Image (cartoon, rainbow, N blue to C red; front, side, top):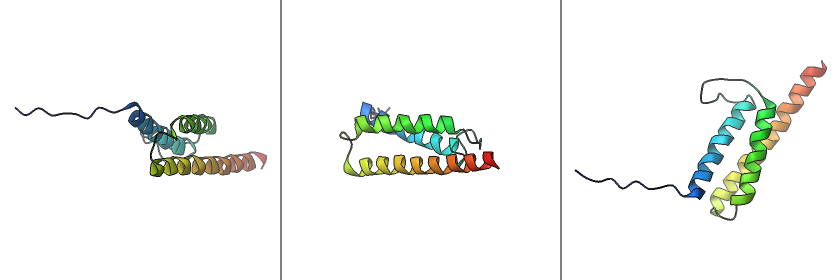
Length: 97
């Protein structure tokens, strides 16, 4: 019987994985994609919490990841913030009519 050697994830790897999971949930809570349960709804408070969390994580990990990962993470956060603002404005306009 052959032994399989499994690669153990480092803390940095786990944080990047967490970042990916939270960013996917943010997109879903912005109402722009379905979540992992197949639900499709908007919850801007949850989206904001996720975006703020990603921002905090990024500030701690940005010097520990390679240039490509850093640019990707920056891009994800920036795009999420922009889409949050857009969805917030749409909701606000809808409520005022």
